[in-house]
Image (cartoon, rainbow, N blue to C red; front, top):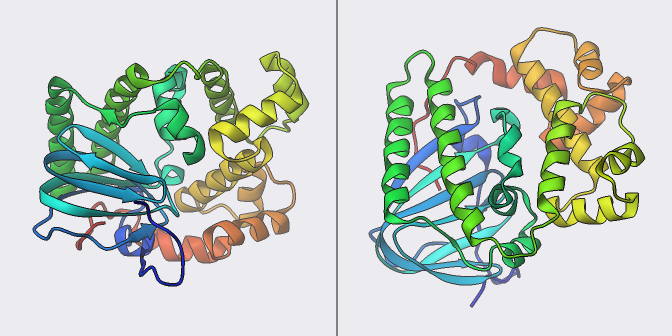
Amino acid sequence: MSIVRDNHTAILTIPRSSVFRDIVHGLRVVAKRYFLNIDVVHGHDFFELVLVRSGGGVHVTERGETQLERGDVYLIRPGALHCYRDLQDLEIVNVLYLPELLDLPLGELRTLAGYIAFFEVSPTLADSLLPTAVKLGETEMREAERILARVLAEQEAARPGCAFGMMAGFMQLILLISRAATRNCSETTAALGEIGRLLTYLERHCTDALQISDLARGSGISVRTLERLFRQVTGRSPGDYLAELRLNRGAKLLLESALPVAQVARLAGYGDGGYFSRLFRKKFGCPPREYRRRKRPSLQACNVAGDGT
């Protein structure tokens, strides 16, 4: 059984505005326990990392269904649909996040095939790279629970520096999961290390004048091979990925500075402020000035009330 998108499927859409309305650092943790035996089909425009703590049930997505038990870890990407059924006291922890606002120093982490396979690849490639769900052993699971307890404590206390404390814990969790995923990776991950290094290079140099031919030459492969592997891993072309990095850099500058939009555009790698504004509006749903006006009043907020996904 899998979820099919059609006019007969009732779908609940959860927008990021309802989850991150008072959070600008892009990270929220929600502990949940299900008392009913079924969940509604839903989707959202943010990432949802899920760790199963206890109980069981069936997780249903558009790619099929899997049995759930303690130690299972899975990632729901923006736009994907999922739900639960046949639940038996299922208890999970949801880590909801927006990568464009976290700006994590991934660096060396991208040399781990498990990180690329679990966190970076397109969903269509994920099944071939990780043929089984990422499973944490009991020792790993207890460590994950300790990490999440600290992150939840930071979130609930909302003390100065809470965003830093939450993200430090999140990075530890990513490393733990990536190492576990590396154990599970199939033998088809040989190219992931090179693509991982390329992703890191693009992040560090996204505002430079980059040419795909130069990237391919530096990687020792042809332009066609680079574009094919890049699209397999990320689901996007190198040009689209680079554009997203630049727009995310612009969004961060808008929130962290009072620079004019034209200067933000230049610092984000765009010589034309008008072109930057058009692309920005297409990605974020509003012009740069409006984005800044909406977000800046709550820059100091660290927590949010309400339910998660």
